[in-house]
View 1 (cartoon, helix red, strand yellow):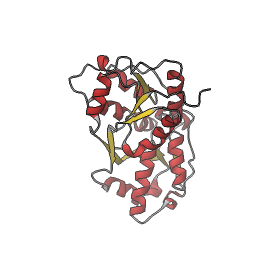
View 2: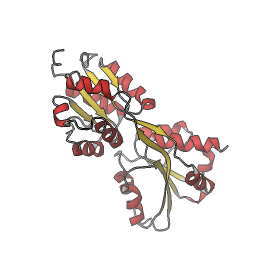
View 3: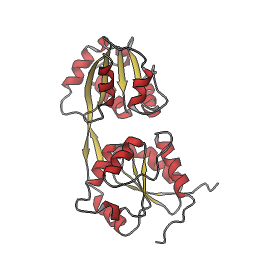
Length: 265
C-alpha cells in the first residue's frame, strides 16, 4: 500500500483550532495538504453557577454521563479551579460516549463504568437496562446539544440535570481563503466532526449556492448525526466511517480518495 495515499490532496479541517492537532497530523501523515479552517471556538460557559451547584452536591448523583472529551476537560478544569479533584466522584458511576471521551476521562484519573460500543447517545440509553425511577443523572455538556439522552432518561423515570460546561461560538477567520479555493477547484475534501462545524461552516458563505460551490468536493462526516446536519444544507456525505472517531474518519478518507485521480491543478 502506498504509505502516502493522499499526496496531492488538499483537505479542509473545520474543527476548533485547539482540537485540530491529531486530525491534521493523521492526514499529513497520509500525505495530504491540510487547510485548517476552524469554524468554531470552545469557550467556558458565561456563568459557572449551575455547574458549581452541581459540584457541591456531586455525591447525590447515581451517574455522571460525559458526552464529549471537551465536556470532560471543562468539567475537570473547573473542578480543579475550585480546589477539588477526581476523588469527588468516588461512589458515583460514570459513563462516556465514545473512546475519545473515555480516554479524556482516564487522563483525569477516572476509569468509566460504561462505554457503549456505539458512539451515540442512543447507545447509552440501550446500555442502561430497566426502570430508572428515582435514579439521579448529571450530564455536563455543551450549552447546545441534542436532547435525545436527557429526554430518554426522563422517560424512564430518572431525574436528570443537564449543566453547560462549555459553549461553541462561530469563527470566520479563514473563510475568505477557503471560499477562493473552493471556487477555483483547489479543495478535494471538507471534513466535519460535529453538527456545529457544519452549521458554522455553511454560514460562512451567505448567498452562495453550496451545491455549486461544493461540486466535486468530497464531504466527510464523523457520524450520521453530523451527516444529517450536512444534508440539511444540501451537502450529501460521501464518507462516514464505521467507527465515529478521528482516526477512523482519516482512514475512511484514505479509502475514498486513494484510488481517485486528483484533478489537475
